[in-house]
Length: 128
Image (cartoon, rainbow, N blue to C red; front, side):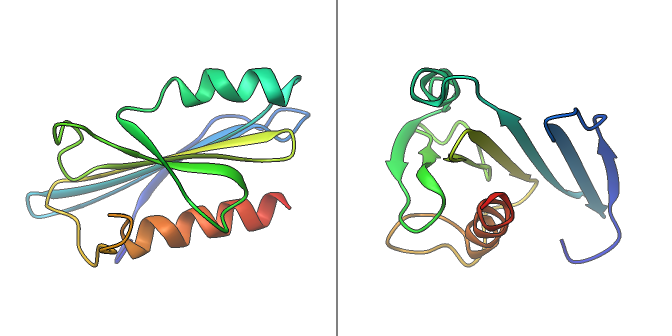
């Protein structure tokens, strides 16, 4: 995140579910990263509930877990934010990134920043 961050987490459940929030402020720019990991009892059914939280159009992402999508806002409603929802077997992960300034180093193919792709790859890799 490019510097010192404040981190908060929810208590880890016996299944390994948790949410981690990271925040970095520098001058008037704020960078926030939230990573949530939850276990689904019925992945084929439960994953659809998580996809319904997608704040925009779901664009499939290849090589990141199973069925990962980038949520692309239809009207720039995220204003510098990115959201990725994916799963690895029976575990779902939701990544939200908010910036106080426009995205940097965005892929022209997917509109996904390198930082967001990197976080998603690391989370999915840790869940395998």
